Amino acid sequence: MGQFDKWTENITRKLASSSSRRGFFTKVGKLAIGSAVLPTLPIARAAAQEGKKEKVRGIEPVTTGIENDPGDITACDYWRYCGIDGNLCSCCGGSHNTCPPGTEMSQIAWVGTCRNPSDNRNYIISYNDCCGGPTCENCFCVNSQSDRPVTRPQSNNDIIWCFGTESQAYTCTVGIVLGVALDD
Amino acid sequence: MTRALVLTVLLINFANSFASAEGLTRERYNWMLNCQGCHGAKGQATAIDTPVLYKQVGRFLNVEGGRKYLVSVPGVVNAPINDAEKADLFTWIINVLDPEHKPADFKPFTEEEMTWGRNNPLLIGAQKRRKELLKLMDEIE
Image 1 (cartoon, one colour):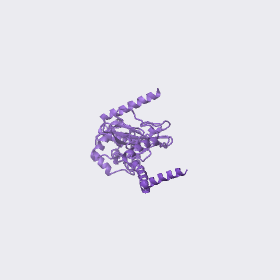
Image 2: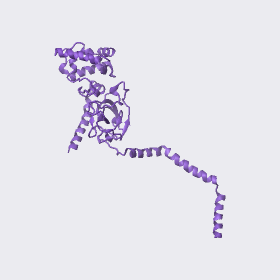
Image 3: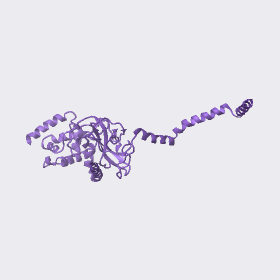
Image 4: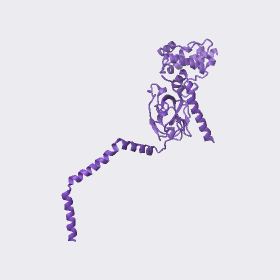
């Protein structure tokens, strides 16, 4: 037993004489700071964002499958949604241009233009609200291209356009392509 | 089967909307961007008490003061397009939405008329004026 004590004491003393407490804390500190800094690097942040986006929305990307119509219709950055302010019907049982079952499309709408990245042309988009169902906030987006102040109500996206429908309760919004815009 | 049919109709609509846009005139483009949101694609919507234009708007040209009324209503004077384009748009509206009531001696709208409308907007009295004109129309029709 005495020999074991002596052996342990020797090892401990050797270790103590060849290392410093400050050195140990420096290493621990470096590790702690490193762990904190790593996620702030651009690559790490982008990766985290990508994962987070899917997890929060819980909806797989959906495309129209139509040529010249790129993008995820359940994402705020889908090209047709450049002026949308509201909930996407494509996340609520409808699609980019159809209302969810049980809701009714507003007779009137506000009309703007969006650039299609596949051909770089501007298209005329009609933003119609779907009305009469429960509010669906699975994908809420606030984009503002072509949006004008409420003093120009015909071009304002803050207005709930549930008019001419049985119910004025707002559910979600669709973006319907009306045609190719002309050059100004 | 129904789902497939709906999808087909949607695809056809989509294709049509992309295709038909190729022949879009400036007048129709201005109509789509500035008018049809509230008036509906064919000028028939009444959802927010917007007057019906389809088969109606030309009637105003047959009574005295009707032409001046049309160029000075709020939706027209506030539309963010220049007066020359607005005049062309107005002529287009008459020709497309209500050719039946177009007077035989109809002259296209002019830039000067649109400028006059902006300088004399019916911002408050539009509804009252409209009723007076409708009464006149009923008397002559």
